[in-house]
Length: 314
Image (cartoon, rainbow, N blue to C red; front, side, top):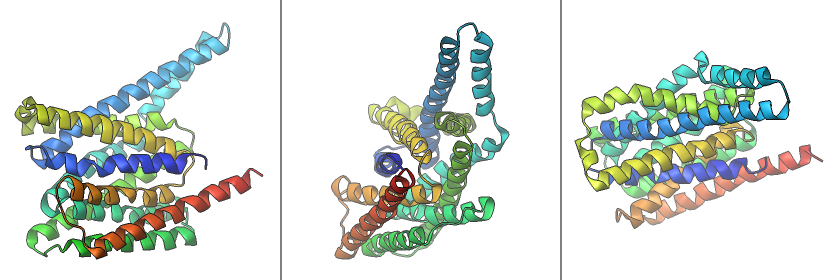
């Protein structure tokens, strides 16, 4: 599997910093989600366009006198960028951002992130099975179950009080987990069919940026005049969106989407640790045990895949 799992974990670490960074800004959750997607989506779309142009130019240079081939390659890449099957996933990307920040605003960073991402592997495995007949392995099921138990320990250890606000936040987080699973499965399907990962991510997030641009205009951008707000949006857009999904797309080239969704559970672990370090939240012994169980589960789901890949090449 080469470095696929490492790329997915790297993306997850970046995602885990998003909730904390968002809480350091005075903007409401909708405006913040919109600004993050506009910046990150635009960057990913530009990266995808640049990639298709380089591919066309490279083909022209490789085959002397066959300019038509290079142009055809570039047109094929551009046609890939407007593939209709990816458009619903772009809508899901935009909706996920709204659900995620709405959940974090009601439940806190740790719980909102844990529920949204913790439910992702379950939804991803089910969607892969139902839509594409890709039945997850027993090893994946065991590791994912253990990882979700670790996430549950984080919630219990946090001592969250049940209330209308928290319940609504958890529902937003669960809906976010389903949306995440949908666009992850769609992206993995396209990449597995031969589409460039950069192009797929450019379509998903570039489309989401177009959707969220009027939302950002309606919610107002006055808060971006503050240096803290501008820095936060730049980091959220370029770091936790553009760079992270660049890595995630690379990871999906060689990592099954169900495995990638389980590896993405590194995100709540990072979010919980940042909550302790930056937001001065407290981790109980149960929370610490949950983090340990989560870490062991991530190793369990990643290492066997590497071994299987090595055996298939011998």
